[in-house]
Image 1 (cartoon, rainbow, N blue to C red):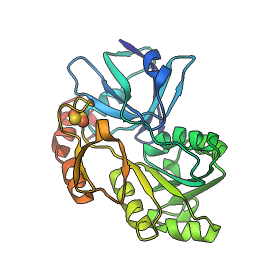
Image 2 (cartoon, protein in one colour):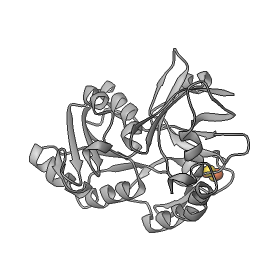
Image 3 (cartoon, helix red, strand yellow):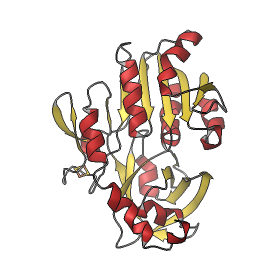
Length: 277
Ligand code: FES
């Protein structure tokens, strides 16, 4: 069993989740993910890794409460245990001295872009961090990211912080700052990763996205996480989760991602959460 060190809501609907898992903490790298089950009969879900402490043997993830399983996770308290916590899984994000790297984070991806930005900085890159949220109250970890970034930008859709607008403002924002990235890395919701890929493609900015499909085993056996990249079938759990955003068949991916949306929400109607609806 794996004990919960911390589980707290850091902004509405978004939780910081720290688990004691020494074997995972020992070898985890930026871009990896873990698979967990909240209880012995629960489904397995993947969570991106957002930080770790090798000495303490702990691993941190940020998750958004969206369905039955994440609702169970959101009720866990420090000291509680979960039966399954497997990792590190997936290929790590490629870290090299690229020059200037734009790291874009939104939603849970603000957390998982953090170790990537940190590693890129350690590798000698100029790290430009851009955080995107609907409103300023949904931003978190700005202080942590500011410590590893050479430049930090914020876009909020309602204009309560940084530049007002959507992620499409990236070229305008970078142009005004005189920044031409040698590489763009995006962690966040599917729509955000797709839009960033669409706006960077005509500019020729290589763009790496950290894909988040539905997964079952996380080890390349079930095929559920498949996606088309450059016309070829890939499995996100073993071939990724990082892929070139300009080569992904986004329409197919979005359709597959939504496949179980009703089933994800339905358990909430029959659980102890139902009073919230
Ligand atoms: Fe089963 Fe990737 S989750 S093959």
